[in-house]
Image 1 (spheres, rainbow, N blue to C red):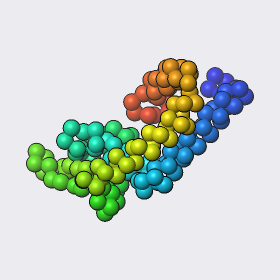
Image 2 (image 1 turned 90 degrees about the vertical axis):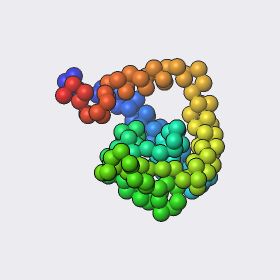
Image 3 (image 1 turned 180 degrees about the vertical axis):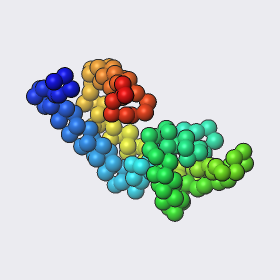
Length: 156
């Protein structure tokens, strides 16, 4: 059957999947130990930090990082309790709110970025070496196959 994986494809998939999961976990543990920031917090902090005015709408954050709006909203609430971000009213949309990066959130993001960047370099970039272009091209093809809605079957 055309939709089934060969034994060799399963071996490649299992290897890739284990690497991806362990890399994600190693990077998250480094974030936590170096800065006390979780990977979900870091994703939101970086998105806010990259914004020219250090704020964004929940729906825009959700779209940017591929989460449901409710998950972003809950995460922002938890981050607000820690002083990393805050909600502010949106003057142009009475139903909407901004999520703003606080000074403590910016400091946490900057502190987390140093160790996170070093971990990415050590565990990923340095290991790739000359294969970086191959991995970049491969990643692009996978993203194209997935499409923008991340449905299991991009054709349907």
